[in-house]
Length: 264
Image (cartoon, rainbow, N blue to C red; front, top):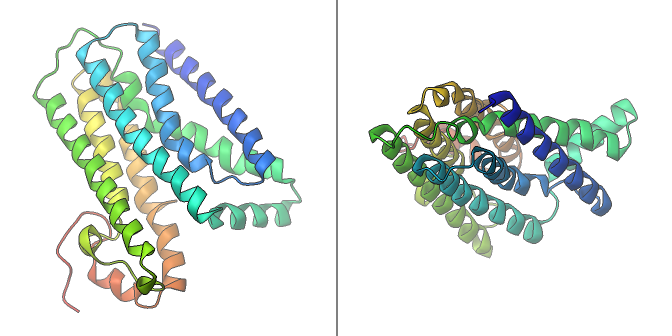
């Protein structure tokens, strides 16, 4: 298979999907739905790859099934959160600053700062479910099954963390308090840790093929993004400003990998 053609086709699919979404978000005046499409877009890329490869081999089915489970779960949760909690303030603040500083319209600012940024990131993160599907001859081995276990663990871990947070926020008695129960007692970001596990697991499935080994930039970029760029740092700056006791929570609780909390 022509790998360049495969990746170019997937890029075209995502560009078209993101342009359609951009127009929809402009029409409603809210960019928040792009968060839901982050997960669903990866399912679309995996499905596009599967259709191009044209072979229902076990590795292809395993990668497609796991990324669909991960993406639909995350996308559905983000859509639910948007409908119940409204616009994500990060986009409002970021786009407002750009418009004020550069004099751009909302259309230009959102296209360049949100959609044109997320589309290439999505394609890079998705490398395991693209390159990992090309080799249809290599049978599934121990590395692939270990990757499937790690991926399923990550999906369950982040799902449980999100559910615990939703339950915590639904109780009026917890208003203004810091969530430090359940999985959140052991890591400040169980959702991000679960995401990383899910995608490193998908990489292990892909890495059992020669071409799939080259997909390592995907999980590396995702992990760096969650830990150092738009994930944990953004959340923690906001939480430290708005939640009394959050700085103490930071001192006591692991930032990523689950670990017993330190004594006060």
